[in-house]
Image (cartoon, rainbow, N blue to C red; front, side, top):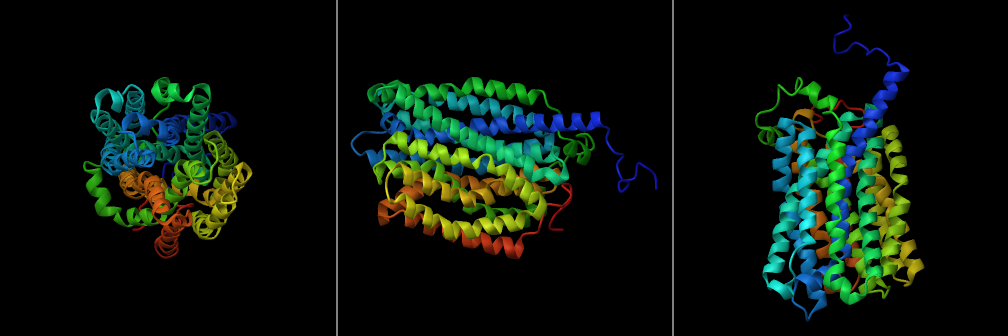
Amino acid sequence: MSVGMPDSPAPPLSAGQEQATKKKIRRAVYAGGVGNFVEQFDYGLYGYMAPMLASSFFPGGDSAAAVLSTYAVLAVACVFRPLGGTLVGRWGDRVGRKKALLWTIVMMGVSTALIGALPTYQQVGFLAPLLLVVIRTFQGMISGGEYVGAVAFIVEWAKPNQRAYYTSYASNSCFLGILCGAGVAALTSAAFEQPQLESWGWRIPFLAVLPLSAVGLWLRSRIEETPEFMRETEGGTNIVKAPIREALREQWRPILVFCGASIMLAILSYTWVTYYPEYLVSELGLSRSEALVSNLISVAVLMPLLPVAGRLSDRIGRKPMLISGAVACIALVPLAFAIGEQGGFTSAVCSQLVYIIPEFFLTGIVTTCSAELFATRTRFSASAIAYNSSFSIFMGVTPFIAALLVNRFGTIYAVWVYLAAAAVLALVVITVFMKETYRSELGADKFA
């Protein structure tokens, strides 16, 4: 059999070639992760700054209603993510991952900076929340394609037996963004007196996203298109003409599987990073700085564990990790809430350290599956449809629903019931319908 045949073993790489390949993969991870960082920096900042945004963009009088309105804006924006993500995904399958991701990071940075320049309710009345909704909606549409595109970019660059490991850094870039968003929110809150903070101090972190996006644009401009995309499309000349239609026709089963498996992670993560700090303040009496710092500690502890989870999943598979995470959602989250209910800073930290156990099993693995479940030629479109039809929508509505449930039932355990229902659904989908992907070829249809 000739060397050029597809099933012939590839010649071993020299030490120099191996080092060059590793360097390219690292650059791909940085380029992919920087957009996730910007997106989640904004998301974390928006969640942590919700009380200040509420007083700036909504009528005074009922602070709880104003905060709920701020979360509702976030939810409305996420509802439009499937539309935007699908359009960006179609573009990414037709012109390549790199070109699509260059534009998404520019538009995300500009839209986030615009929030910092908006007039307040006191200045322009109801035009203020309307402008906020418009910008967040546009931003949600762009973000709907950013994350899945970045994950596809990293997975298509990574070695087959290290996909979850390298993709764990995409997840880490999200948490790093949330961590920095929280840290900047905490520093901003500490640096200004309350009147100054509510008047103009909250604007500074949003405006600071613009130079961050410029750095991301520079990083992404320096990396090549993924070898997987170039191989499957014959150098970009043999693309799918209608990737959305083909994804819905050929990939509907993995789309539904991913939706069923990923909702629990959206609820788990965004209860933790967006709603729980506010709950610690409003219901358990912690100061805002204590609540933010307790959350920062748990995020910082989880981050170095995610590459470990990726290595473990590359060894034992995706399904065992996901099943373990679903069981942990059901069994450990109520324990975390019970610890937090004891009150005080130490209890808040300990509760979140328990809370991140299911995060360990789920976060990077769901991220990897968002690329591995789909064939290369329609991966961007299919993963955008799947991710945004489940994860993004529940990511956006969860803080609002959590606040509503606690307000209605008077207990944080109502949020656990909401999460447990999603975890039970995920267990059924993963055990019955999901196929293992950790040793599969990226270009193949996993459900053929």
